[in-house]
Length: 574
Image (cartoon, rainbow, N blue to C red):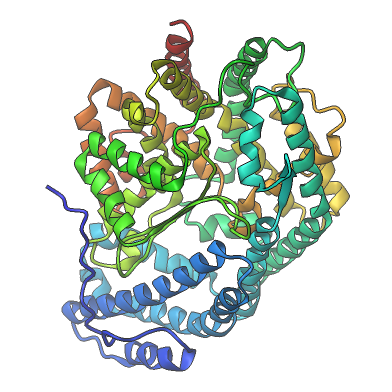
């Protein structure tokens, strides 16, 4: 039986009380590793373990700097600590990291390592050596700081409703309200507030795109898209596979989304849906409220996860006890939600902006799935073994959204509310695909045309939005807001090209859920087995270990979307 109570491994290379403060205190450890003689495979493995310890300590320090800054975007102290790491420590350690990578690849003993265990790691090291370029070190440092400005700008956005100030995340709950006038008021105020910072975000994004293109050219690539595919380790698929996915979404998913929106229009008894109607409930029906605050949400989530499998609940309980949760939305908190693995201590941190909505429950179980992945892979020998690709990381989180539905009666005492919650979740499982395709296709265009103007970018965005829109939501009067709607997506600013992974993984999660419905315990066993492998196997091998296929071809998209639609039909015909 697995135990979620992780005891951080004692340090063997660094002093127990060592803390990352300046480059000067770190440099001697890099030099020790660079100068150490390696005379046999045992010495090489010890060298790798010492390097892993150093990487874990540095990684956890950097993560805490980022966590603190996202928790309080108004704190100059936190911002300066993060910026110091990006500008004064990271750039100085990168040349050493490259030298250590080359030392490993040059070692004659690397071929004596367990080739199955080390295959993906060595492949990744070869990739890093190929991409490293001294000219890019200061640019990457600057990019890390610039990207965080998105959170600073967005974290300060608030609006007033009924005389009260709300963050945009908190205000979003009004879009579920039966009062249509209130919904339109909140939508209009949100749009106006976002448009206030439109030019600032446009300028920030243009700067990011230009610097990213420069990095690609320095590394010998034609554009940043091609560079980023390599950097992300997309060894198992190509840009053409992405284009095929876009086409499959348009052909097989859009008609289902159109049906979902038509069902919503009929439910609200409207002549036409407006953007503020898509998440609303009819008059007389209260919006779903699975919890009232973060404390209640985590308590219910622990119970839900424990029912699914006791180990899952233990993971969240340990995080709660260790203060690794920040769940409620508040002013000057960065937008979005994340699970941040902490490489040395092994217990991750969940950050989100809960406001008591159904979508917050989805976010909680999603990030909880990521957290379980962190726990399951923590005991692997090297830190690098735990740096799994997003295409499997998102299977961990999205599968948990679907698995956990069996126990959502913890959040909803009414059987009707429970039915509505499951329907919303399954509809979202389908309706998320067009947005994923939109964001991904937009990024391909942006980086294939790095010299584009803001006007050209806006025109292309509208064209792509139109391509992946079902066409039954009336945006008239809000065309300006729709034209800059991409600015809501933090991934574009902070983690470029990280988005199609959600689509690939959503297919994987649907396949996991299909397996779960046929044999729950076997599916959960496969889930844990695959996540426990970290990144010691290729993506295809990890999917196979989970009992599913790594596949996002049109035929597979059609098959899995059809399965979800049948499950939706079961709920809607009750």
